[in-house]
Length: 231
Image (cartoon, rainbow, N blue to C red; front, side, top):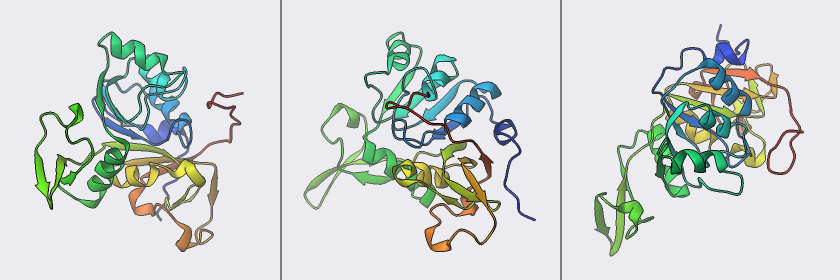
């Protein structure tokens, strides 16, 4: 019987190795799998390459993972905001490597990994420092930059509801990078607020089919204030 429900966050994250590439869902604080990130800190994997839209807020979640010294490199599109002091300090001191990726490119490079696309040409960043050293090509009179997929060893994402087969439904904008990251990783762990019986999810409403999900773990709902800080 297929049952992808994990007993705990710790058991769901067991086996993540040092040096792994970890795709972490979330757009700012929307859809960030905070409990899974805390579990990854507890799990102890080091020298990680992290892919996220941002580079952490305040001192919690992704920022806490950076502060713990577990991350070697981060790929993101928006590393700096008002409360990105943890990232700023690490980057300025040379303790953290950054690969800046335009947001659309980030999403498409993840999607390409899941779709089995070897590489693709994109006009974004042509003529800028972000295209330096990359292959370019003129197509139909427009200049394009060659971009490669981003594959993950593991994806940590947050969904709203799941079943024991791993089928997932998200909540509004909290969906963001979750679906493409689930397809781009060899292993996907999703936190959910509710687990329902098989058949309760309308197949037409399932966003991430269970075939892309390795394990799900149920977490409590936690109220957040503006900026994502816990009450």
